[in-house]
Amino acid sequence: MGTTTAAAGKQEKISLLKVLGPVHVWALGVGIVLVGEYMGWNFSVAKGGAYGALIACWVIGLLYTCVAMIDSEVTSTVAAAGGQYTQAKHIIGPLMAFNVGLYLVMAYTMLEAADALVVGDLLKAVAAQYGAELDPRPFVVLTIAFLAWLNYRGVFMTLTVNFVITAFAVLAILVLFFSTTGIAGGESVLRHSELLTDLPYGWIGVLASLQFGMWYYLGIEGTCQAAEEVRSAGRSIPLGTMGGMMTLLIAASLTWYICTGLIPWEYLGQATTPLYDAARLTGSVELEVILFIGTMFAAIASANGCINDSSRAWFSMSRDRYMPHWFGAVHPRYRTPYRAILFLIPIAVSFAFTGLLDQVITFSILSGLLGYTFMSFNIVRFRRLWPLGSIERGYVHPFHPVPAIVLGLLCGATYFATYLGYGTSLLSIMAFYILVSIWFVVRRYPYVKRGEQFTMPWPRPKGY
Picture 1 (cartoon, one colour):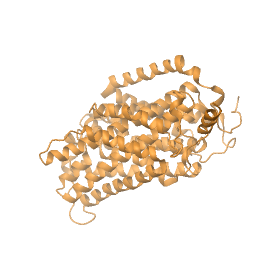
Picture 2 (cartoon, one colour):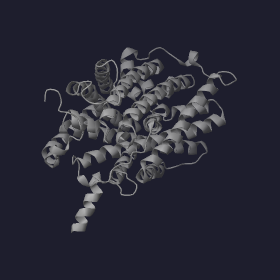
Picture 3 (cartoon, helix red, strand yellow):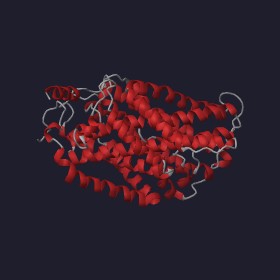
Picture 4 (cartoon, one colour):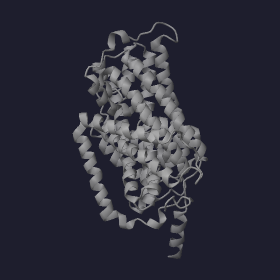
């Protein structure tokens, strides 16, 4: 009995390894998001036309720049696994923390399912070119299972792999840009003068396009999930997050420019893999192969990062008993939240098997959007409770409270945009989170140990 108790005590002290640097944070953030340049963003073209999608790209880029700035300050100060969940726990309270943790888990799990769908659909499309029929479902399962195994074995190896394949996916976009514009030699094959039209649905279409414009950047906030595993949070989180945001802004603009110059907007708005389709239209076998590999790598890198982030959020909630404590275990050898990783596999697979890519994307977008709404008032409360100079911060974002106000306004506009196209989905997900909040208060809250919630060595907040 004594041995068992001692072993249990020893297991609880096992912690996550601090092995990551700014490059790994960049790879985590960009790796999750870059698939949005390869698919998903183009659904905004169907809503607002090509120009509407470009406006959405830059407006939502501003939204995510605010997210990156706010996240960099709070996360470099609250340097613990769980990211925004841990921030909510310290700054707002248990009910908000539970909801934010669930937003993170659902957003990343749905994004992981969408990534696996893209892998399966791309292989099916390539097989169809050669007259073969391919069932994509085994490849969906294989992708998720392999990446879960990679995450199970260790975060350093996982994010090192992500850096390599993400870098290739970024280079693939650059190669396609230089090849189609003629900058690298030859003539430009882009036909913007023929394909670009005015706003087909007016400004209401531009507003509706904001929903899928989020796909250009959705997931960059996942860099926060690495806070407990970086060597220096004050350096790695701001550098990795802001560097990742700049990378994505450039990649998003190049992606729009390439695809709208090669593909009619009516088709582009419903394409599954627009960059790969653009490469095929050039007639170059080399570009087609490069963009096929780039699309595969982007989807795999995104799913890989999503498994990392969703499992850290679930692990953190379980460690604090917001969810069953059993899921809060750390592997004694690999130092990973292995039970949380394994638990989320069947959930991602089941959503991927629906085959409803736009609905899965919408579920992920709305969960992420709820989290961003929280950030807009979280940073205001954070600065009010612990003013500058009262605690040590790894990074201080400028122009406060302007980013918080801009973020709140843009979130409101995006909610309305989502309601225009997916009103039922919006109401359904809001009802879901209300119901689980009631469940938490009634059934789970008694297990939460309030005295153990506050783990940061900070002074009492102002006005306490």
